Length: 128
Image (cartoon, rainbow, N blue to C red):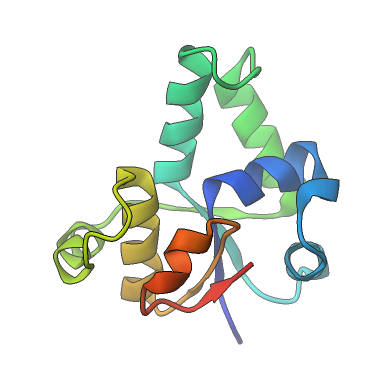
């Protein structure tokens, strides 16, 4: 069984605009056959962007909780091993949230679902 970790953008799309997902992403998210997780780092990123006015989400906690339920995703906490894993990643991508998601996927042995083509340069299994 494969476990999937959703990057922030695909999580947002899965909840609010599924048409933006690739056919492959949509099939994996909708199938409910494999465990699906969203990192607490993505939740954090969404709250920060909503507070800055970059995302039109009025009540981020309520929206996030409903979104997680709607796609049947669990939340992956940030563990020390995830943070330590950052030291093993080359500095290709500068976004700290994306780097943490990569470290989490690598540490857990999971596949990252992402639309960010830069992340494909890392030795982490990715679906786009």
